[in-house]
Amino acid sequence: MKKLIYGVLFTLIFSQAAVADDIKDAEKTLKGKLESVIIVLEKKGMDQQVKKREIVEIVTPIFNFSLMSKLTLGKKHWPSLTKVQKNKFIALFTKRLKDSYLDKMMLYTDEKIEYKESVQVGKKVQIPTILTSKDNKISMIYKLYKSKQGWRIYDIEIQGVSLISTYRSQFDEILRNKTVDDLLAKLERPKNK
Image (cartoon, rainbow, N blue to C red; front, side, top):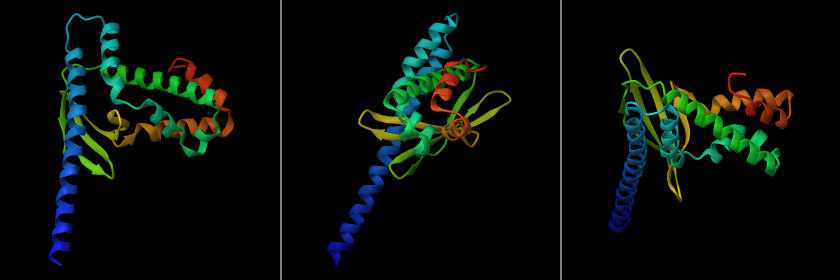
């Protein structure tokens, strides 16, 4: 009986330590990337296009754009795409996400990032942050999972709204009445058209 109790206690302690390690690793990855982005944003006199290129180089490795693309179309639409359509969708959607992220980052003035307590949900980690400027607070939750390449972002919630869910709703509405090729054509057009 004692062996069983010790075994259970050891397993609980070990699993809690593994969870803590996962959370710390995920936090370290995200914080490192965000701090690097802020350093670039704070550089005075740097050309905007150069800043954008540097930011893309910093953040691209932490995002899993392929998975985000798949999750956005979901089980309802993703399986029906051909391989060519999937590759085209991933490329176009990745560009849309990067452009959107860059647009938001280029608005940076002197905001500060506050990290709240991270939460492990299954094998995934959610890292809540608050972006604070003089008059505004924006809550964001970065959702990460551990891949062979390290911790990767698969979704971001901004003010309680999931980026993936928002795009899924938009794309589902288009695909109810139109074809995948229509969706791809829409994604090829600039955002504001």
